[in-house]
Length: 355
Image (cartoon, rainbow, N blue to C red):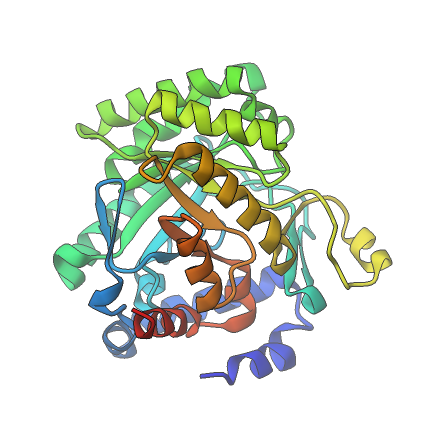
């Protein structure tokens, strides 16, 4: 199973990263449609020891796949076959959009990191919603009550003015909430102009309040609502987000998104500069992500809203460290690109042995 890193170096490392992602994801989806699919599901299914309850939902494992890998809900079943306890789809916008011009995805292999400025490329909420419904039905058939969980991450359509952002989010919430196990409001991507301004508490309060109302009304039930924040917030701003989460009785906070900083890198600075603007993810983000997690948990309290920790997660030890620090769930993404399809199952096995 550890053959993949060598395969990555030989095959994918010299390939355009976005093309490599597309090929890899296609292979994962193709395998799921063959007789190997059910076999993979059985072999990689998380141990019952790992079952975790968060915001009223039972997760087969505390470890899941962060938003960004499956932007359009086209491979949920295939990804859950690999052992992820949940898959967060998105970021999805109300209107379909192509994202930013290419190239827009860059690897920093020495740092086990990625820089992206994808720009929320996706098919739009109306096309994603039926895929979610189909995936939920299929997972219910194959996994029963203990099925993997589907989260949906929503963001602002780029061409929509910031003044109209709330209405834009509401369109996505109404379309997607009925098919989502939980919903995430993404106000922290650095790749949509002005988006991070919505992290200001005065903007965030009405946005979250109205999205929650629209989501619950559309779904006919309470849809757990979380907000995803940036690692670049000041400690005071993190405290403000925590206080807002308590005030609004949010179900959780996802910490953190990618960073616009370029610290803690061993890659040649000229190479980094040549990549241009975008969000940095992967191993260099680990310490800041943990710091934000600890600050949030201290502010939210031990029995406060859930925290989903993401950023620099590579190993089962990383996952355990986040859980011990107060995370309810943990997500990964960038290491998946470097570790390959057996990564989640390997983490789950190690976690189960420690319990």
